Amino acid sequence: MNREIRKLAKRLKDKDPVIRRAAVRRLADVGGEKAELLLIKALGDENPQVRMLAARSLGRLRSKRAVPDLILALKDINYHVRATVAEALGQIGDNTALPYLAELLPEEDSELLRSVTRAMSLLLSSDEPPSEEIKWIADRMEQLSLSSDPVIQAAAIESLGKLRVSDLAPRFLQILEGEEPYVMGAALKALADFGDKRVVSYAIKAIESGDLIEEAVEALARIGDKRAVPTLISLLSDSKADPIHRGKAAWALKKLRAEESTEALARVLFGVGEGNFRRTDIFDPRFQYLREQVTLALMELDLEMLHDLLEEGVKSPDGWIRMLTVDIMRLVDTPRSRMLLMEALEDPIPDIRETAELELKRRAAEES
Image 1 (cartoon, rainbow, N blue to C red):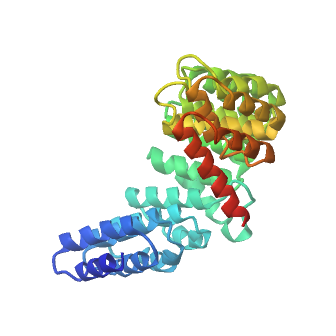
Image 2: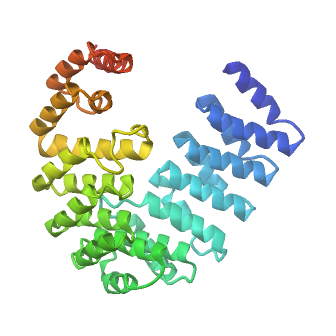
């Protein structure tokens, strides 16, 4: 690895910008402290495309050590570079960059404004009230929320939600009757940040009609209104629905502490029918996400039921179900699941035995 880093460092000094760009791309794949330091240095390259790639790579690597240099790079003479730097700061998630990004809000260039508003909406938190130091951003964001550019408008609306500018709720409710999904989704998020329960009926209708499902589910979970539970259970149980959306429904039911959903959650965990887990796509990432969210929901709502399901799964005559059960147990670190993993060490299928053994070793290593 050190040899490769030295080789890439040498290529960053090559006269040909094409070779320097290739080196930057490879450094992003390599990662690590030395690669990050070289990428930070590349922010000063004479070629703007090299600088853009370096910024993008640092964002991809979530490089906290690069934040001071990226903040300086917000003043790059090339507005494409400034836009890329803004997006990288948003990806990294260090809100110390907020005031420096805010200095770019007077910019008129639409590409740069898109990047800055998106980055700021990422850095502002939905989970805690804004500090007095950043409330002044709201005036500019309110202006941008009227932009004809849907990307800028949506990012500004999301930011206003996080800034808790709740007197804009009537306008955001009107936006929900519009036709621009990107902006409507942002309005849903903002209204949820306000805790405005008027959005509940709209979010339920959106899920039932198949529109803005992820945004609607998240809004319902954040507002915490139990009227949403039947709709969320219906989405969770729909074997033809997108597994990601079903997983989001499981997550929301957990957030809502919906104990009445446990039977539906249990059916989904080992369910049969179209889109079930007993197929060769059992480890498709989308189905894994659904399975994980259902497991986490059951852990919180009814751990005893989950343990009973896992015990049934370990003893199932179906090899797919047993494999699935062992995979699920990496999320359920309890004494009872440990006993079930030890039982799985005797399974006739080698892959199941190996998976159980690896999980037991992982737990032992964490405890030592």
